Image 1 (spheres, rainbow, N blue to C red):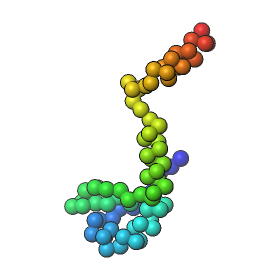
Image 2 (image 1 turned 30 degrees about the vertical axis):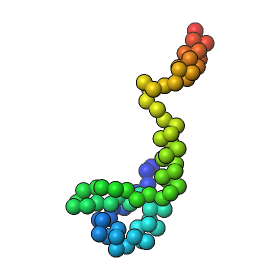
Image 3 (image 1 turned 45 degrees about the vertical axis):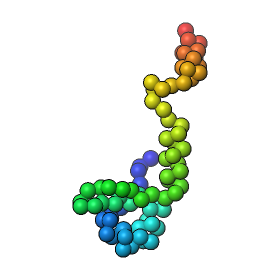
Length: 80
């Protein structure tokens, strides 16, 4: 799946035309720049909540719960 095209706006443009960029952010990210450097991203609440759910479902391999490790090991040894 291709990532949505992103729009770039300066902080000043965003402040002057917030409603416009807020509407754009419903469909695609708006990268906000300050002094020529990307600083923030304006996204829809739906995208924010999707990312938060995804973040909560993820963990580092080193932090894998013991129960998951036991299940993975049991699955791996079934085929042997």
